[in-house]
Amino acid sequence: MESKYPTTSSSNADSSSEQAEEAQKVITATTDAIAEMIKQHGREPDVEVVREVDRRLRLCKNPEKVPGSKAFLAKKAEEEKKAEQKRNKKAEEEILKMNSNDPFSAAAAPKTSLVDYDDEDDDDDE
Image 1 (tube, rainbow, N blue to C red):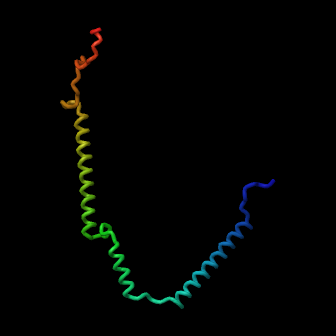
Image 2: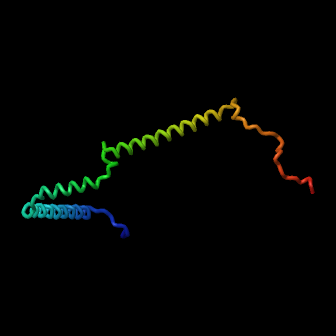
Image 3: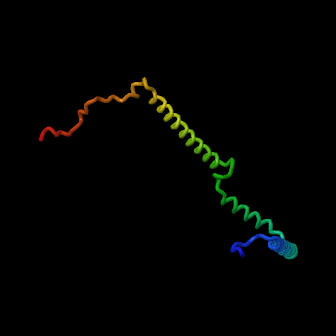
């Protein structure tokens, strides 16, 4: 009985490891050829060109992401201020929750009466 799913056999495993070794040899040969071309035809970049590229990269940097810069410190201070406000708000909410759960406080028990005087349903008038 022949299965419709491929099975792993030792011959399949051997052929896949052989393919992997062959691919590794091709990659190694290619990288060696590239390295040889760079050694033969490559040249060091001009110092002034490198300085110009470096200057342009510095201009493109986001100062908010450079540690120690004024913008970075200002952003950190703003984030800390927001976090402090959030902590304070949460603390105030927790204090209010604790105070509202006090069964002996005056604000805890809402004053309700048995009669609703604001009821405007006048069924008696008909």
